[in-house]
Length: 85
Image 1 (cartoon, rainbow, N blue to C red):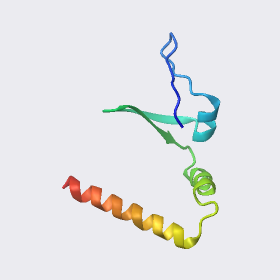
Image 2 (tube, one colour; image 1 turned 45 degrees about the vertical axis):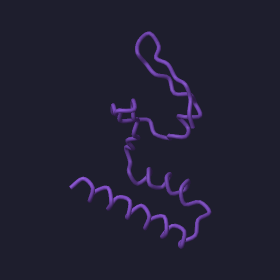
Image 3 (tube, rainbow, N blue to C red; image 1 turned 90 degrees about the vertical axis):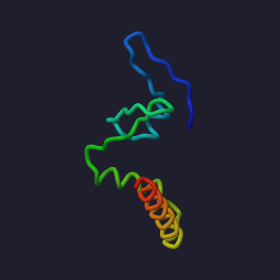
């Protein structure tokens, strides 16, 4: 999802409703990065966050597919950590 956003006179950034519903988080961490601004969700209740995420990410996937995706993610993370050292 991509939108063009702008700041108001008070420096506030308005996120359209469809983006807010997509995030389903009320609190975000804002971090400046080389490419711009990164918004990361911060859930008050981590168990509820996992439940919401699971309903979206796991819907319609087999155990075999989930294992494959997990293996790819593990290998990606391991490779990134090795490159840092």
